Length: 140
Image (cartoon, rainbow, N blue to C red):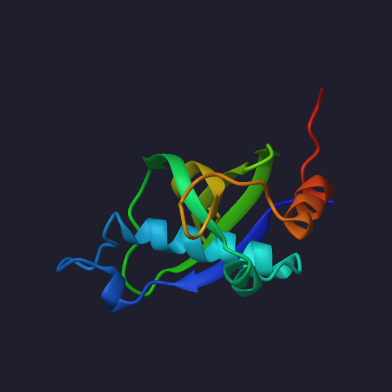
């Protein structure tokens, strides 16, 4: 069983600069969508967390750009959970050309669980802890 989630996307004109190349910050949007859809596909509702004073924020990101995407390209954006603690999870993400899986962009992302009202770290809710344990095998 693989823990890599894939989200297909297409590049629209709103994603590009005047030359039809994807603006570098748009890759962050693509990765955010893939992380959100991965969590949703695991049965964890993010809206319910808001009602419980829970939010998730990117606390660290290391990103590498390999090649540009262009207007009308079809992409695959991946999210692979690789580690977690009481209030954080690490994911490896890639943006690939859908046709040949050529790497366009890769990032290591740490997402923190915080209290919505204070922004301070807090433990993951039980549903998220269960999902992380199911999807991430930590070698000890």
